[in-house]
Length: 317
Ligand SMILES: Cc1cc2nc3c(=O)[nH]c(=O)nc-3n(C[C@H](O)[C@H](O)[C@H](O)COP(=O)(O)O)c2cc1C
Image 1 (cartoon, rainbow, N blue to C red):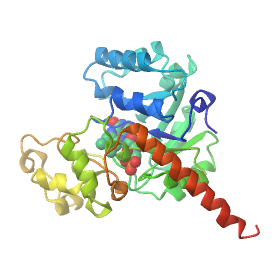
Image 2: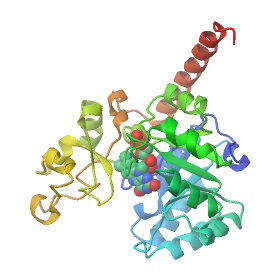
Image 3: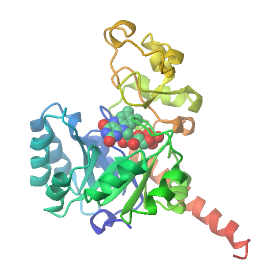
Image 4: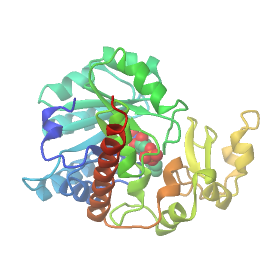
């Protein structure tokens, strides 16, 4: 089930996922105007004051027909801004808060205090169980092939296992690139789709032009899954590893850890010049405005559901 505050004005059942260095207010505003939930990581602004500025910008641009928006908070000891950013989030009554890494009851309670919704991202059932105990409203199942920090479990395995003990909202993440992919996610038991990589290839994304072009030029075979770059397993565009002087085969070998100090060129940085993308890149053929992309996704979604009903009608179930 989708919480009522997020259901309002939702015309395409998916969330444009928060992406480090990529999602800013332009992407959020355009996504919400198109009828899909737009989000950004609070840490995309260098300071908490900057975070407030972006929230003000988004709030000022919002129209009565816009879909809800959300922010991503990293709940981890290394995020020294968490408490400040949480206070700001509460003061602005941000409709959706996506927590990553830690699922903490105090954070959930703070968001619930003003009627906000908390979704938490997980890669396995153990993390899902902990987040459920913390009282989150929804779980984002980050399956294999996702951009960013991806899991390694098949989406069907995750959905079925987690649905057996969690009654809240399920959001499926991982290589969803088309409207039919989102239809398939819903058919498999998710309530919403979660799309990251597909939204990097939009005019409004704050990604380098060469990064966007690389999404067009690559397919799933060009994605390297490694923990060597950011310490946690994530998917990266292999050509961007090569462009930064890294050996993708070494990156995949757990015995051959990359020595970041020696093997990277001095300007190379995870996410900044070493670019992340999910295995869905093979479906990206052009860069377009968000409004056009969401319209295309909606058409694909409608065509897929139509095809499904026609096909299933032939089975006399
Ligand atoms: C470049 C990039 C940066 C990301 N940064 C974040 C982030 O800061 N916080 C977060 O919760 N997820 C982050 N993600 C993960 C996405 O929110 C989402 O789970 C993922 O993109 C979905 O898979 P897809 O890219 O195959 O659609 C990032 C993904 C990408 C591609």
